[in-house]
Amino acid sequence: MKESLLFHPAIFKGGHIAVLDETRLPFDVKYIKVKNLKNALSVLAEMKTRAFGQVLLFYYILILEAKNRKIDALNKFLPLLEETTEKFIKSRPTFAFGQLKDELINMLKNDKNDNFFAGLKNTVINYIESIQNARRYRAKLAAQVIPQNTRILTHCNISGELVALTNEAEKLGKHVEFFAAETRPYFQGSRLTTWELNRADISVYLFCDNQAADILKRCRIDMVLTGADRVTIGGDIANKTGTYQLAVLAKHFRIPFYSFVQPPGETKSIKDIKIEYRPKEEMLLFRNKWLTSKSQDALYPAFDVVPNELISGLIFFDGIYTPQEFAKKWKG
Image (cartoon, rainbow, N blue to C red):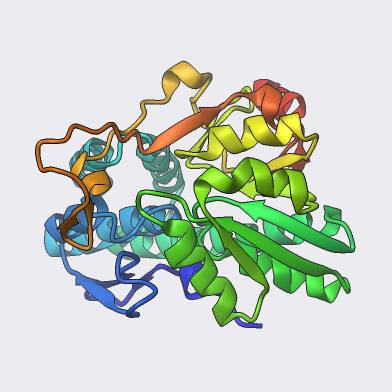
């Protein structure tokens, strides 16, 4: 089984970045050519890429802009890094772009390459490859703990890691079925998760978001598994809106709730997470057609927060932790 296209949603091509346009899936597989920061910010704001794609976009655009601006030293690069970080945060405030910035600075400070641009490019490319390998290992960890015949309920889209998990499960002789929430209003579950799983010949059932309680009650779900756009040191997560209600329901039905997570950085608590509010038109329009009157008001927080008491396990790059173990890992 090959890796999902969503596992590599943005590809560095040297002179540009090829970004998989996730808003056109499942109807068309098209890539957007991103040549500069302005292009990148447009792609980000319009949700052409998200989740792991925005990590790739952030790092790759720094290479392109450094090349475009002929930056040849770290002190000249830092203003570009600050500018890019601020603009990315303004566009998608819930995601930890500041943390990505800090990680890159630390790596560049330790780089001994005499050619700054060559060092920047090598550092980013190698770091991205290490993240991808860590994501593959994370999928392997998840496959080891699931039952022999597993039904997993998921929400939104985890950028190819469900396919990776199934690959690893099959190596262990395990069979996996997925139940995917449609994930309104952007329908990432419908358009992305079912698309990539079907392409990989993996069994998946799609259900409406408002069917979640009934599905969890009747369909012998073994695990709820989601991604996380943010995790706190205390083991709380922020993820696509609708995740919180699934965690509450999973707790009620005594079904374990797990999440793939990244390092928390300086995110100490829920209070440190700013929730992004998307334009109301994204709820009121579908394929450029109004679902309501144009004067209708709407509320669209793009993310919600799951407190650690509702979480069974956090699947990190080096192991699976309870929220308490996760907090101990980062607090020392």
